[in-house]
Image 1 (cartoon, rainbow, N blue to C red):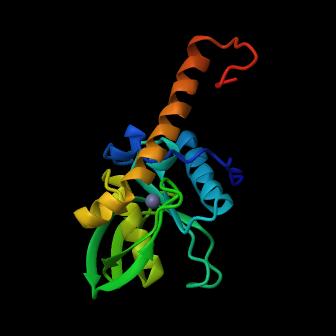
Image 2: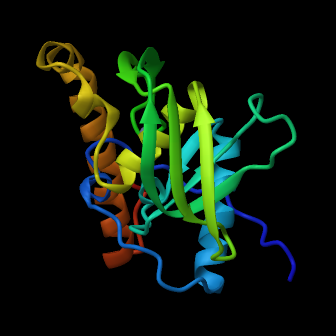
Image 3: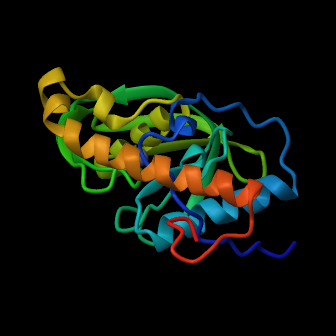
Length: 196
Ligand SMILES: [Zn+2]
């Protein structure tokens, strides 16, 4: 079967309710899902992410993509379906960011090593064991699939310091959603329209 060529899709921003919606488990691998997985990998690579969860491109299904660059030399980016964390070890403080939270970075502790089980893109059972930065990425993506963002793991004080930036992102996302809804209901728009 020919490898599907993915599209670079829009990554939704903080404030989009899809980021808070727990995803549903994959029960069938069909062409739609294969296309979505190709999109997920292409979007992650194009936008320079280490990982990307399906709900970040608006798909509420339990799939994330991982880009094991650097750590495991020749491994291509791949998707994990229905991931479950089965073991973690150690703890390390590290900086974290998120494509859905551009400009927001902070330090938080995560396990140093993680083992997850799940399915590969063909539906075969797989185990992934990673450490360091990739362990952080995997745990960050597994959080996404449950509707959890890394800022949820910060202290109240840290979150308060980020509040104005978060409000900005929320407003940006609300504007995009408003325009998308209008495009569906009134495809003809005049000049000077903010959504045109
Ligand atoms: Zn993220």
